[in-house]
Image (cartoon, rainbow, N blue to C red; front, top):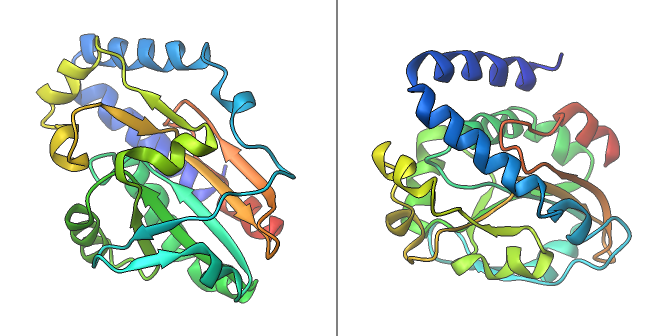
Length: 212
């Protein structure tokens, strides 16, 4: 078992002991519903062209994919938001392996729908040394086919836990990206893809580095 997987396993045990069974069942039902939507097979695939993007970073500066690709490959890591403990574990683990990623000539970029101020707070809190971009209204994630509408039945449980997506994302549509990681080569082609609608399952970072 890789280190990130072990940390996630520990988090699962912790949350299962802390959260009421009703909430755990609602989250599980949400994941099972997402599996029926066939997002993985309907989203952008390996070998396809990654669309270009121009998105604001945590400081509000616009970052263009075209500029980054001039320096080599890009790793795009889509996460749900700083409110998601699984996302935070993954981003921290990517940060811990950032030197290996750079050694492979790749640029790591994280993308979520949360506003730049939330991203800035998360970047500072976790000492992230890579760009964290805001995908306003999940428009880029929608182009890739990895955005989904959070089900109405589960929204009250998010709110009950203090997770108000309207505050994080500055809209009221309750849309999120499926956690996904893509490697994009200098020709904008997708050469590696990890996507799982079960947000508790995350990328094997060692496998990612080998794929660079």
